[in-house]
Amino acid sequence: MNQKINVGIVEDQLLFREGIKAILTNWDIFDVIFESADGFSVIEKLAQAPRLPDILLVDLSLPPLGKTEYSGLHLTVALADKFPEIKILILSVHNDENFMAELIKNGAHGYLVKDCDPQEVYQAIVSVVEKGTYINSRVLKAIQDRMSKKLKPGKQLMTGISAREEDVLKLTCQQFTAEEIAEKLFISVKTVNGHRNNLLLKTGSRNVAGLVLFAIKNHIVEL
Image 1: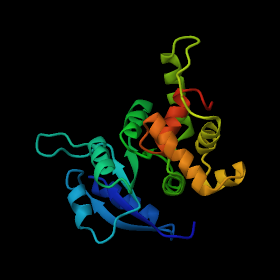
Image 2 (image 1 turned 60 degrees about the vertical axis):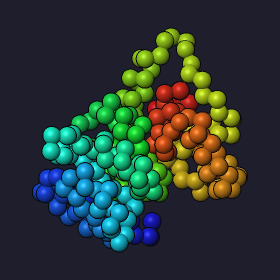
Image 3 (image 1 turned 60 degrees about the horizontal axis):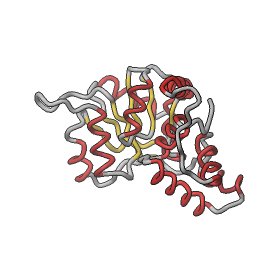
């Protein structure tokens, strides 16, 4: 993509925060315009910021507010409420599908393990900004396996979505943009977005990442 992506970093470890910034300078499209060493002050800082980031990289393990826990999950919930236009990419040392599923249910758009290589950082940020989601395929497969075990044999969860909405959902899960989906289905981008909005309402999902989880849970897509 040609347009600059404004990035924010919420990470309490200075060395790691500076490391992310150094990695992002390898690509001209990224501009780090926001930083915070904690989560509890982010909402106020964003409210006073001259420009909002397109995406926030948020550490899952953030320092508490006094004796009160304030993790990346708490910040995700607050951001989804106060600044829903900002995409959220969670950073964590935990490669655990349970963490990721819970975060996405609460508004996160993607999940990145801290030991990933720099190219995946690039891929994840661009994917979240352009397509609304980034989830490592290996973690997605683990989520599918876990959810499949919870279903009783022969039991299918009701989806209540139309055939066309299912087409849009499947292509969304394949990481196609709205423009690409429109071209494949011979419909307008406006229609694609309309179907996506209907899907969000019908599934109770907060964002595209939530739709992907819904599709896996209901066996609409197989990995």
